[in-house]
Image (cartoon, rainbow, N blue to C red; front, side, top):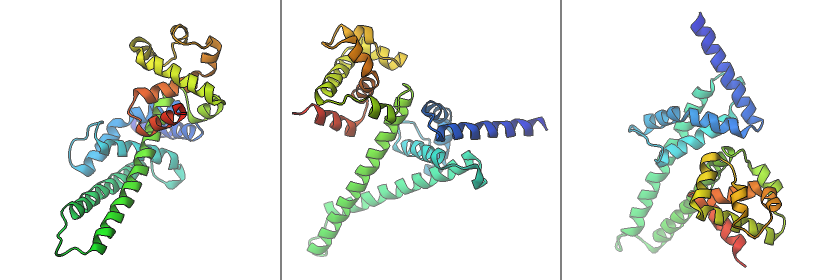
Length: 247
């Protein structure tokens, strides 16, 4: 009886947590995903039939799928969050594996054509198929990168809405903020403080840049976001920074 009450309370607490996340609590989202990483890895492993590491692409797919399940979950569905997310994770990983297999098949067809059997028309079809796949794959990778960045921002108590509201309005101000972030990342001690203590070392940073403390504080969240992009594996977002800096 006590065990049943414990499980009911645990389920209720999880549902309450999901409800708060769906209302916009990003810090709770980050905590929930972090605590359920073993569950995600186990679910992905059951599909791949091998041990899954957090560095594996399949784990990233599972992570994104778990986030998707949190966004779409509703108690009215009649399933627990974990049962619902298990279905979503398995579907997304299977889709990913199928796409990877398809890509390998297309590559073989194009790189090893038979000049006697393959017509010019079929070569064009294969090239178009590969181009279409590359576009879709590029879009998928971009979405995954945005999600990874969103989760990282949440651990610094920053979200996309904050960036929209607090981003410098003028081009020169944005460039100054980006240059400030670059100086921070290039300084190993300041970078360590940012990543370990989850805060912007404003006092130390003020000594390195030609902008006022007030300006740094006003652009704090934007500078943090840019520094995280420059410090991490964010290919698409670094293109954004490059575009802002170019004349």
